[in-house]
Length: 434
Image (cartoon, rainbow, N blue to C red; front, side, top):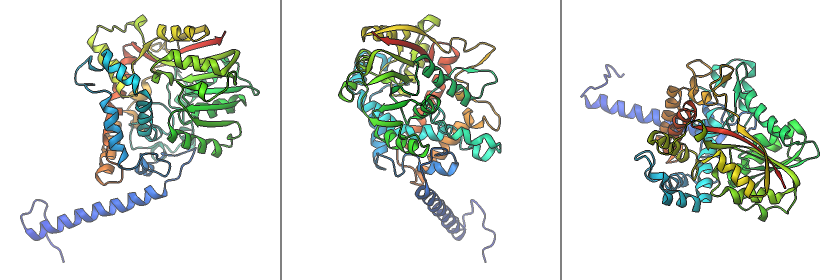
């Protein structure tokens, strides 16, 4: 019988028992998590909806990166942003930007290989860039019968949000608004430019009845998105294909689509004129192109000579795989030079601090409530700690902690940019092919 086992005892027998007990606990945890990893099943309604699913981050049957590939991929990605967050201005030099523009395909593909699972995990497949939130899933802490909705959107983007409106409702409204402005109908053939795993694509199809094709450079997103289309029963009207939106004429014949949209996607483009010209090629004459763009806002205060503004801008870029952030005028000019007539444009978050709206970045900032805990800074720390433990136990691939750190940091940059009104993820445009 074992008696008087005291932590910190110098008794060799006690120390040995502690070591054996610790190793047994680690082995037990490893076996349990390994079982969870093997039992993970892709589900369009609740993938990565529970704490247990976190064991499959970056390592599941659909993953395109091998376990050893995660560390190599994040290392290569970080090289494209050498000096980021250590010295302001380093990644804003002409040489640094040109290097990312040159390597954009590798940069963006690597980025989404690394972060897509984190996006789904972060807030139940709801929105872009909140990939680092708490382990306290709503499946556990929210007994409301409405919890399932939180795991069914799969739309990785932000949206202007009215007071009294849930985050999910704001996402749907922003997508439906694009569909209405683009005159999408049940007979329309539509192109989703930079579709991610296809959340908006499925939502807009179910809203309009249209036939929608999504293009993403990332094969992992194609695998996941097409599974979700099949599970939701819309695979006859929705499909995702792998392709580079800088080379759309190589994928589609001229005049193949009635309308096109892009939601917070073409900010990854190294040359919007080429990207938008490709969209123009795909549209029939008079076809409409609508979208939301990430831009900095000189019109409301962004100053390229302010080191603090540049720091925030660079932080957003490194944490989101962007060559460099444009201005709204850059976007309009690229549309016009690509054969479009710009019919309308505005910042959908122009009333971000109105007493009638909830700031778009509030989803990242969070509040210390049961339902909002996972979005607080402490909640993100919990998730990061969990990822650290999974990597330590060799459940998560090496490099997972670095991905989590990258995304934790950019959440703070996005909040700062929104608070100061020097950045918006929702610059709306409506353009018509001449």
